[in-house]
Amino acid sequence: MGTVKSTSAQALCDKILVEQVRSLFANTVPATFMLVAFGITGVIAYSGRPSRAMEVIGTIAFLGCATRLAVTLLLRDHALTAPLDRRAARRLEMIFAGPYLTFSTFLGLFAALAFLRHPPQIHIVTICLVMGYGAGVATNCALRPWLAISSMSLAVVPMVTVSCLANDPAYVATALITLGFLAAGGQSVIVRCRAYEREIGLRLRASLLARHDALTALPNRLALAEYFREAVLTAPQRLLAVHFLDLDGFKLVNDAHGHAVGDALLADVAERLRGAVRAGDIAARLGGDEFVIVQFGLDSPAEADVLARRISAAIRAPFDIQGLALTISTSVGTIVSEGTDQELERLLEQADARLYDAKSKRRVAYLQVVPA
Image 1: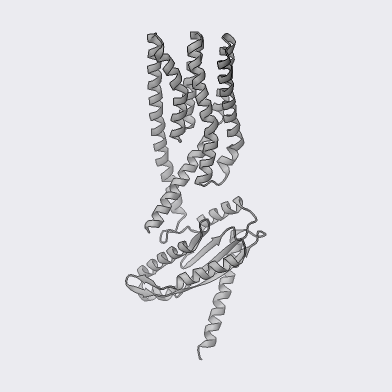
Image 2: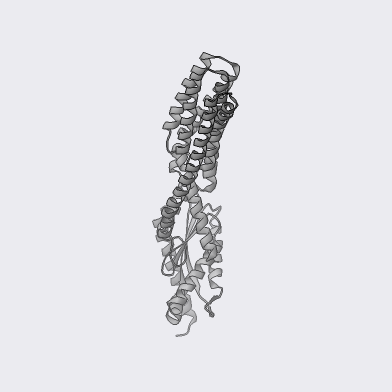
């Protein structure tokens, strides 16, 4: 059961990460405003005192900001609606972070250059721009502290450094106050992220509990339906197999040894089913002694037959339950879909019918070998 708990904890962490990454794409208004504000500031600064350095740094910063906005707009729908795992979420985060950090870096260089070469009027506008950017980052990227704190530091530190070097108490005071805001902003980001992680963790944990069987920790029918729907949307028209199975002899064990032994037996069966499936496939408990396994992305129907035989062999092996050596078996009904019919309920009905046929054939075979 320790493996089950660690797996559930990892699944919870993955879901929290996905939600945090989705938040990066939720709002495009700040990026739009920053693009306009930086464009205006850059034009004013360059017009007042043109320089090649200001032109290059300003252009790269503007393109970084524009790219940041374009990436958010292009990937927003996918980020907010597509089924994402940890790897996909990390990939989206890196795509988002590239232009974000680029703009932060060159905004910081732009601000430092403005403080070095331009009059105080430009300094005022630049401070507003940088502090406004830091506030926006603290709001929009708060759920990814590494990105928020890195971006704020890249934008603020060059300007602060130049201000500290100025032989003017007002500029030194400005630098110290700005550093204070940076530290406070970083702390606020961390506190907000931790609070959000606790909140979403509780919400997702409740959701996971509602979608898992309490006895075996396997996904229940609701979780199976959700997982199936996401998998089919991700890879439609792929060959898949649905295995419907129940336990032969379970009722006898339950009646003879009690529900505690029966429950322990079901938990052990679930553990064996987890060990039988591949990564990406799913084993679920529907209720009682009925289980379902769904295989995705098969190369041929023969793979479904191999798994069905592996399941049967796994269940036939003796169980050691509270010092009792128990032996049961399973009947498996398998249906393979080649992409023309991938509705879970229909496939479950067909697999259940195959299961009924398999049990009927076993009963007939048993009656034929047992003398009247």
